[in-house]
Length: 114
Length: 112
Image (cartoon, rainbow over all chains, first blue to last red; front, side, top):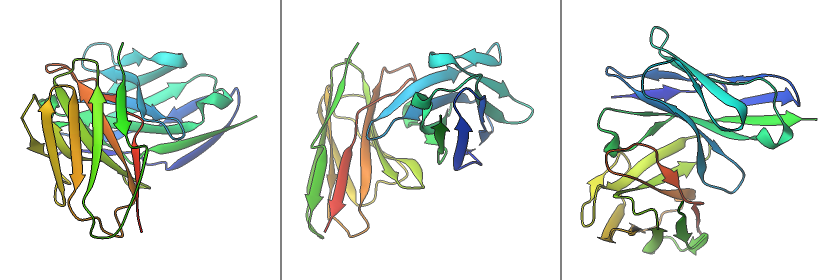
């Protein structure tokens, strides 16, 4: 069985500051990893995904994530946040048979203050 | 591009009632999913469907039925609404052979 852990339920940052959201996964095979963002009263939107290759992947709106097989992690980063980045961020994992759906972490709620 | 539409946006039911949620997508995706989102518990897979008329149970299928009569639509039925059935239900779809899932805006269920 696979699992995803996001250890920080809430993160508060000032506008213009950097942001890092942590994600740890547990899976015996090669994972496909994703970060999704959920704005208030909306569905989830894909930020970025990782399959293989360069462990640093770029996403939308200046987000990037770094995969580490040795640490079983897939942390999300942004160099300078804007107030509009306030949202809930979900890390998710897909097993080899991706048609079986995604396994999500519990999410991290990010609040950006001016 | 495409869009996923979920109806209704809000669903209020009585305990014990059978309630149906609907999802439509115009991506021409093969695979569709239903997830339940509870506060503080992330998203959990209820049912998914690889193609028309296919149904697969997820981790949270007990208490739910699903139906995929057409490629573009996927319905979820709460067979007997319970007081603790207060959650957001998210529909998603993806191409078969790909993994990026696109999500609808959700249906918010409240059971009185």
